[in-house]
Image 1: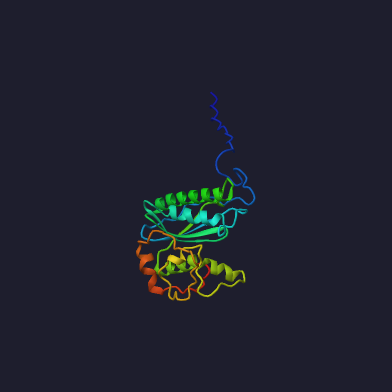
Image 2 (image 1 turned 90 degrees about the vertical axis):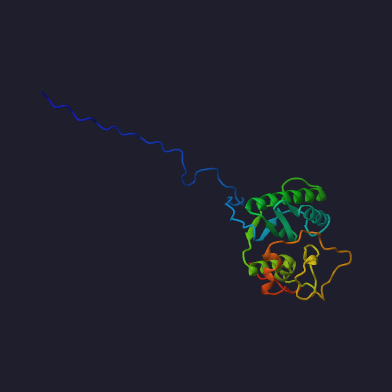
Length: 232
């Protein structure tokens, strides 16, 4: 009797579509925003340095009609549960903030509310509509007294820094009226500060974190003519 033949293993052709592979997905447009990345944690006892950039083509944020609207929006949106805007600087196409937040969620909600309020104010003042900000805000937690001092100088003296980079000059003792510098109580020598007639310090919430109230002073008060270092 003949022996039975062994069974033959059939080959199965595997499908090659689906799943992640190089080059898959919608092509990215030239000049598009970078992919969203998870934000770093935000400790509740550490302030943060936040930067918000405007799209090209918007009016100068330091000049009328945009500046009065920006100033009013900053004061109106400076505080909400778990979030405080304590210092700011407005440049022609971007803004710097020092904020305190109870955590990452509080920072996100606070900045979303402030960004929306600012965008609406800028659009209304300039008679336009549409998007205002070039992508998401950038935030960096400040964990040491030295980091906080650098950030304070960088934010409050940002116009002085830009003027120096562009070969310009700023009058000695001058404090930027498009910032919270006039309300800052940590100047080393304010005798020469040029307070413009009619200027009033913005009414922003007082800081509460140890780093912003006391800790940063361990490294010395800030000179009214001090130029912030790059990367602070």
